Length: 435
Ligand code: HSE
Image (tube, helix red, strand yellow):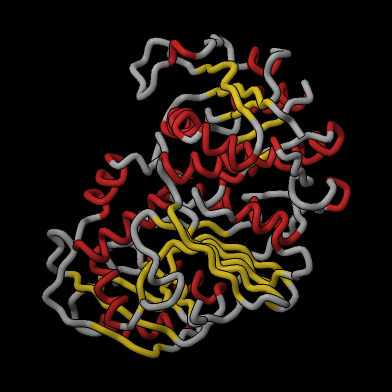
C-alpha cells in the first residue's frame, strides 16, 4: 500500500479540472476514510495560459505531458486528454513503460488499443484504472471486474451515451428538434468536443466493446459491433412510438443468442416503464443479465464533471489500496479475437416512411414488405403531417411481426430504390423484454 500517492495529471478540460477540484475539496475526507495521502505533483495541458476554474500556479507545470511519466517523483498518471492516437496514446505507453499506475477516462483509447494495452499491462504488472471510461459515475467496470466473480453473463443492455440520451429525452419530452436538443447538450458540457461520436453511436460502441471484453473475454473491437446512430430520428417518431407504448433510446447490447454473441448499438423501441425506457436526460443505465444473480440494473449520471471525476477518484483509491486486476479480468493469453455476427435473429421492427400521397402507394409499400417476408402487426397513417415542404408525402408508421435482419435490409434497399418515399425509411428494432 502507498502511504503517499503522487499524481501527475495530463489534460485539464472538463474532466481534468473537475478531478483537481474534487480532489482538493475532498482531500481530508478521503485521507481519513482510506488512510492514504495524495499530492498533485504535476499538471499538463496543451494551453498553459488558458483561463481555468482552479488556480494552476499551485501545481508544478509540465509543458510536455510525457515528462510526467518520466518524473521519478510521480507514481500515478491520469491521462485525461482523450482521443485514441497522439499524446494520449503515447502517454499511456510511456506510463506503463515507466512502471507507473495509469488512470484514464478515455474509452476510445482502451477500445482501440485494448489488445496491446492488455499485453503490456500483463508483462509490466501495471495498474490501469478506467472506471470513468464507461457510463460516467456508474461503477460498472468495478462491478464487472470484481463484483461478479461466480457469474456467467448472458447479455448486457445499456444506455451508454449521456448526450444522445439527453437529446432523445428532450425530443420526446419537450418536443425539441434534434438540432435544438444537441445545442442544449453542448451548452451543458455533456457532448464530446466533436459531438459526432455521441450522435453516430461510436461513443456508445467504444464503451460496449470494453464491456464485451470484461463480460465475454474478447479483445475490444468496434468492427464486430453493428452500429447505428440517432441522427435520423425525428420528433414525430417519439410521438408514434409512445402511441405503441414505447420510448426510443440508443441501446447498446451484447447478448448470446443461438450460441453466438450479437453486438449492436442502435436506436431501439423499449417499453416506456422498463429500466431502459424510463432513464431520461444525461443518465446512463446498464442491465446485466446473469446466470446466478438474475438481472442487475445499474443506473446513474453518465456524463459531466461531477460523475466522471468521482469515477476517476475511485480508481485513485484502488491504486492507493493496491487493488489490481488484469485489464479485462483475464490474462492477455486467455482473451480471444472477437467473432462478428451482424445478422440478427427474428424480432419486431418499427418502420417509418414518408409515403407518396397517390393511388396504390400503400398497396405498393405493403407489397414490397410482403415480398421480403415482412408481416405488419400495427399501422398508423393519419395524413395531414408532412415532411418540411414536401406536401405530397405523409408519414406511415408500422410495427412488424418478428422478422430477421436480412429481410429488413433487403426491404430497405427496395424502398430506397422505389419512387414511393421521399427520404430514407427507418427500421428500428423493438425490445420486447421488460429490461
Ligand atoms: N460524451 C459522453 C456522453 C461523455 O455523452 O456519454 C461520457 O463518456
